[in-house]
Amino acid sequence: MKPFPEMVKSKLPKTGTSVFAVMSKMANDYNAVNLSQGFPDFECSPALIKLASKYMHEGYNQYAPMEGIIKLREAIVNKIESLYSASYKVDTEVTVTAGATQGIYTAISAFVKEEDEVIIFEPAYDSYVPAVKLNGGVPVCIPLKMPDYHIEWEEVRKMLNRRTKMIIINTPHNPTGSILTANDMKQLERMTKNTDILILSDEVYEHIIFDGLEHQSVCRFPSMAERSLVLGSFGKTFHATGWKTGYCLAPENLMNEFRKVHQFIVFCSNTPVQHAIADFLEENSNYDRLAEFYQEKRDYFKKLIKGSRFKEISSYGTYFQLLDYSSITDESERDFAERLIKEFGIGSVPVSSFYNKPVNNKILRFCFAKTEETLEKAAEILCRI
Image 1 (cartoon, rainbow, N blue to C red):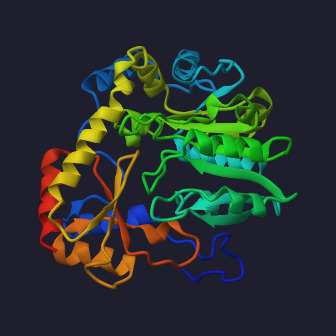
Image 2: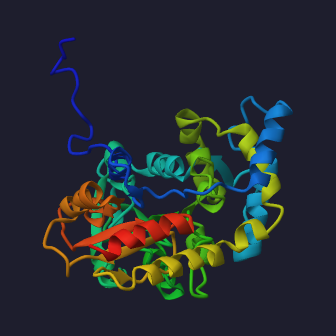
């Protein structure tokens, strides 16, 4: 069929397929050990699967309420109050989403208008910048400071102006595994006080934080929470990324606007899964031992690759480990990541893909949400490179 060249003008002319999908497909094509895309290669809880099946068989297969079933919203509100001593109203301040990425897009669409500026810290999860651009906003990308990927707050202060609509934060941070401290949050709180700036806080790895550190949710800071939308993910928490179920928390005035957009993007998320997760949340141990579970995997992976030529960069949260390969080759991150798949049979993600402009810090991201067998196979390969 002959195309109409004047008819189709891309809204994202410089955007291709997500790097996660590209590298994961390449790993599969070459039958490589896949530590690229961030998903577990082990099953979620059999009890959770049994609950989902139960609700399917009981007939809970039609549309859920737009805002999510009340039982799950109550469970989310109770969890947040227990963890962060923060109170949200079940009816008006929590919405169940079809995964956190949908929630992020909805939040940006609800508030970002033409020429509004949105501050994004790079390297950044790859949905932020396109979502801002699709809504006519202007991404203002500020690099995190290496080697520990921290925010230089004075630099942020200088970038604020009357067009700044939103600041997006992500803690624990994908792809670096860094976290925001209480001091970071207090600085952000002071910086946005008495302004109209909104905070979009991506907290999908809230339960995966290591070394006895404490997750600093926006919810802990009342004067910042009142201007914030907080996103969470049950897919990350319960090893079920394909279920695409998450949530958004926000004060009622912000949630009203969020729901106006949410209803036209997805309307509601999976009904039997919502019921299953609501039941599963009744037992705190289903999420409050997650940090210990993944820290064991992080530490085991680090131990296995100790004799390699890769240099680890500290990961304090998420299920990702960054490795510096500068002592191995001068190749670009993308070229080296592709060669690792083709020649050595191991998949990773170049961290340069998380930047809006070209960089080459010679760092790759590896996912350790894998079985011991998978990690051992991966480490054996890395140690002979």
